Amino acid sequence: MIRNKIYIVIFVLLLPLIFSCSRPQSQNGNIAMQIKGSDTIVNLVQVWAEKFVELDKKNNIGVTGGGTGTGFAALLNKTCDIAMASRKAEEREIQLAKEKDIHYKEYIVGLDGLAVLVNKDNPVNKLTIQQLRDIFMAKITNWKEVGGEDRQIVILSRESNSGTHMFFKEHVIRGNDKNNKDEFSPKALLMPSSQAIFDEIYQNPNALGYAGMGFINGNIKALSISLGNSNDYVYPNIKNVMSGKYPISRPLYLYTNGEPVCMIKDFINYALSAEGQKIVAETDFVPIRK
Image 1 (cartoon, helix red, strand yellow):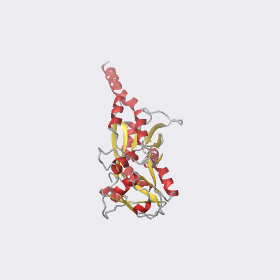
Image 2 (cartoon, rainbow, N blue to C red):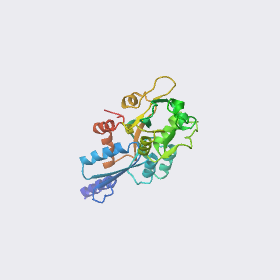
Image 3 (cartoon, helix red, strand yellow):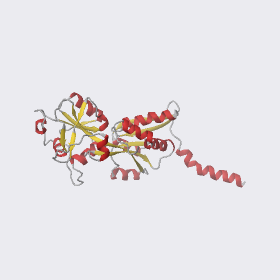
Image 4 (cartoon, helix red, strand yellow):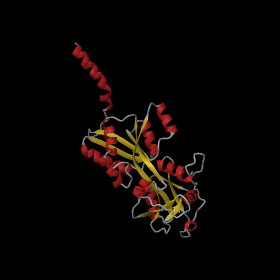
């Protein structure tokens, strides 16, 4: 009788763990996990997911972008297990989550330099932060004002639900001043993804936009950026982001609802492992550990 009671107590204690590990099944019967959010790191997380599934074929992971705000909303509405973010959760998001008994748990999984991108045929190679601010607020409207040709500047920005949009606004437009309420010019074209910004710059010689460092390749050009008016211009690359020299840098995050368990915990651990961090570097972001 005593032994039976012990078994019952053990089973009851294990019930939360058993049910916490239960996951919805995909159509093929495999365990499913949903990851949503930042377009900046969607390609990185997709690689993690593919490698993670190779380690255990019964894992099935869906990875979709849409912006950091979309990721937080999905975690809030319990339509994803992990939210990808290119900024920290804001106080209003944290408070709204608490009201719904959701408790964001934050993990920094890498670093990113936010690159300022132009068409590869644009002769401009560098800008100061002040020049950038003036361009995105439409105080500078022609490339000849910053050493380029006599052409109107077409400014591209991510949409407001994007963590990249918020980061650029806070660190460039507002200069890290919490009392500054400056906004992007209404002339800025709001693009649905970083890929859309890349595509527009690729075919438009007058365009200028911003995206994660992973979007730099031979088809477009990244500009060197200076905090002041000196000749201390810094190019966005892994070395300069890691050293802190590049002035537009940020952490990259994964968020869960509370302490992760089972497959969610395993995935976070994989992202932070030596192999996961190697993938961070291979996808042109900056690892937080070797």
